[in-house]
Image (cartoon, rainbow, N blue to C red; front, side):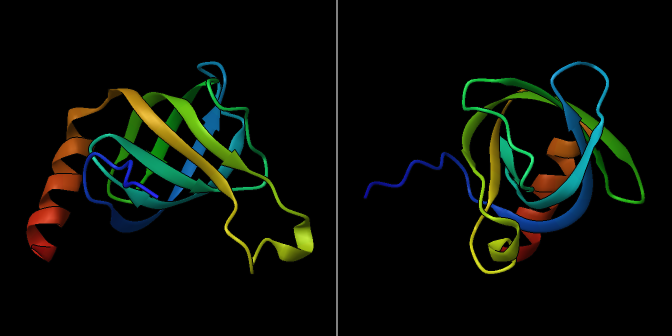
Length: 110
């Protein structure tokens, strides 16, 4: 299987609010971040290709981004802690501060 990731991921656990309009009614957790996208752990997924609006709350700052669902996996609720589930969101628009946060974390682990 070929590697599809464009940039390295960093583990960041933050609350994410998301939805298909500017309103972001769903709450989940971000698992990782790159400068091209995020992984959201949730069982409330959208189909790949869906435009999604996200707000990422790091406790220090709230960042906004927009993106397209790249992949989605829903699992039965009892398996949610055992099996990978959620969505990968590829950014189309991202707050500059979120890019800076990512780059600082990548530099830290490099």
